[in-house]
Length: 112
Length: 111
Picture (spheres, rainbow over the protein chains, first blue to last red):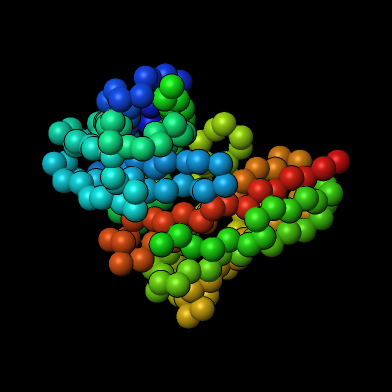
């Protein structure tokens, strides 16, 4: 089955620790995205990548980092510099920038 | 910059109609509509490209007024399954065509 997978579904970390969220897709999509979702805030774009080895900052990139070494994978690292990291994180992919996005199931990160 | 959605929330009885609006301060290339059930991933509903087109399937349709930088989602004869949060995502050349999503409209359909 083609789709996007995110793991884990729930993640707990202590304050001050970096944590990496996984996102994998087998849809052969060039573009991938990371969003953060907080109650009442909608989906806010963290980073996006149009193609392998290239990525751009979104609206709320501070405290986050990404890499795009393979077409299928777009991991997101939440660093200790992110002041309020507890949130629901969604990964998405599309054929190209601006095309229909398909979302993964999300990872709920809680920092204690 | 996030597009503005209205209303923030709406409660309907089964069979009633609803309209959700989405407006942007930027010139838009496209508008995408998604629905999200609680705790789940957003699911794509439809995409509208500039040109003032209207799209729809079954009882859910949408329009896009490029000049006014607005889009509206129309839900007619609502069903219980329509409940969820609806998001519009707007694409513009300013953002490299990556989507900016609104804060969402919560829709509850009751029996």
